[in-house]
Length: 501
Ligand SMILES: [Zn+2]
Image (cartoon, rainbow, N blue to C red; front, side, top):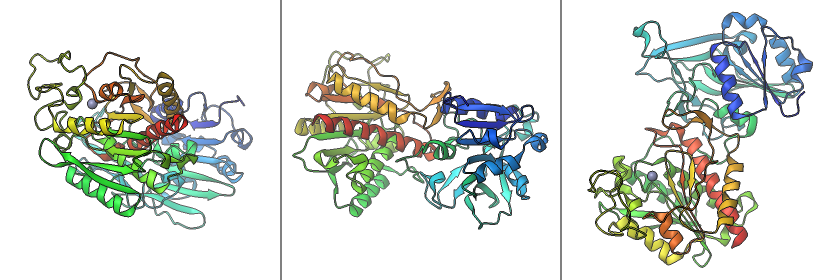
């Protein structure tokens, strides 16, 4: 067996099975061997050379050519199998169904059990899980159909657990069966499309596969709804009530008069780390990542064997409440807050034709004219943070300001890249290529701009940087991936800052 190939994809090489192979190659580069079971010979001995075996019968006619007894024997000997539902159902004598519904009913999966496979979700959470026949449908009448596969009549017990059930008919969409020393995890991988940008039914198609193969979800968590700003602030207070180490502080009113709120952890005498998100209000998902981070730091101050209590954390998940609530880039005065900082403000030229409120990057009437900016600048002035991360969406890049501690920033970048490897598959916004969620790209120290990070760098923060990551979706379907990525990036910064503090 070639050294690095640890995953065997048993497929009939047809249609959707082929795209799963392409996607697995992106997720686990060099680690996947594809074997066409309709043409090539294989047996338990060959399977036994791999850590994971994935079966995909793309065309039902090929089912009889798949030796599922060999797959089961492989599991019995300790192998980890991921199967699509059809071959699993048939091998167990269970009824298989594929259900089409109209698009006003989006088929979902309700998580029934919290296990390693379902990490990121709590029992009772539901997520969209379906494919559509909108593209390539021969009859336009069917272009608004959604479909999902299920196993009907599953009997639990004897090592069989229902992990996810259909919101359409209660059938099994994800099953775990313990077999001898190993297991088979059967799930509907064939219904969801490729996880194209902002797809509802397929965003998490490979999340559960990832949980089996590489423990993909570490800190990420699903949040069932995109809260209003007031709802988000209520959730911040509720979290602080559960964790005495966490305090929530009012930082002052924003453009619509409501308070900007911060999470605070640790002794103010310690070096400060400042994390902020949603300064462009429509870039909203990272706010949930920062809420999750606050929770992680309180539940486990010694996370990853770090002593995080040697630091002081100031976290403002939503720096632009009005923009968050209204899905706008600007605040309530039409100002792009990340062009309003008192740093090289006069020289900054808006790229739009008219410099006036609500233009894309309207910088305001004077440096720090906006209350939100005054609040963030005030935090930076008072605490002189060792690290400032300003979270944005939607791309994958780490932007550096005009100055800083290059070694520290490079150390953080290295750590981020390492953490994100082989975790999530996504599509670059908007309509770009498929790729892993990553932070490979980093800019060089650029010119000074009226940005938050430039202001912080100017005030002496050695590690101020801006993160652009996937987001701007219209609902919560990508939050496990988003929150996981935000927490990982924050922890990379924490780890490297602890080394130098
Ligand atoms: Zn932005």
